[in-house]
Image 1: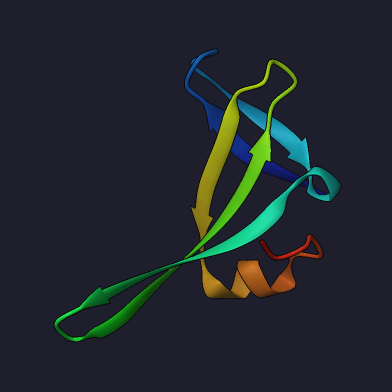
Image 2: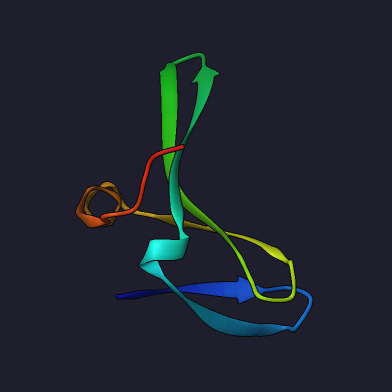
Length: 67
């Protein structure tokens, strides 16, 4: 399965294989409690770091390692 990212250097969308991705959870403390955002990180073949955000359901369904 491939994951779609946007490469800002190329100015186009790229598909990266799930095996080359890592899951990450961004936590932020707010007045109402802790906010969590779920993301996926990878690196394109030209060295560009890629990040995309997704829903909790998609995050849980992915088989890549958690950072």
